[in-house]
Amino acid sequence: MASSTGLVWKVALGVFLGGSALLLATCGVLGVAGNAAMKEQERAGETLARQLYPEVPIEEVRSKREAAERAARPKTLPPGHRCINGQTFRRVENGWVQISSTCTP
Image 1: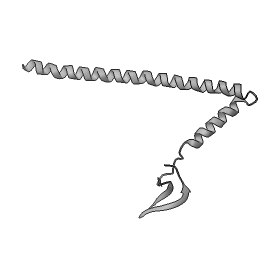
Image 2 (image 1 turned 90 degrees about the horizontal axis):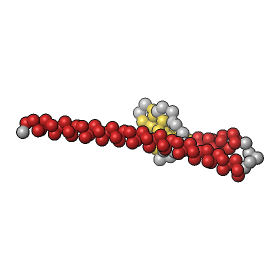
Image 3 (image 1 turned 60 degrees about the vertical axis):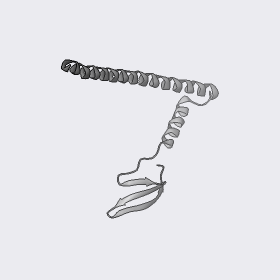
Image 4 (image 1 turned 90 degrees about the vertical axis):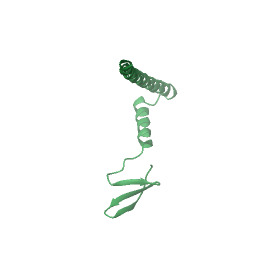
């Protein structure tokens, strides 16, 4: 019976490692496929923009899209600053001081 218990943990370890490898491979394939799909949608959007607005250069459309994406991203705060309930606070020696600017958490 002692030899069969040694086999059990080896089988369990093999199943765990095999499952982990399969999960890792699946995530890699899905990541590559998702990236390809996003690039394809971006190209389709640019093609549609060319059809709808042929007089506007595609570089202008691309720059406007990138500017909108940058504006939608939350702003990074400098070190020692925190965003609490939409207000910016700065760390001081004995606590926090409210800064007049607003922020997005």
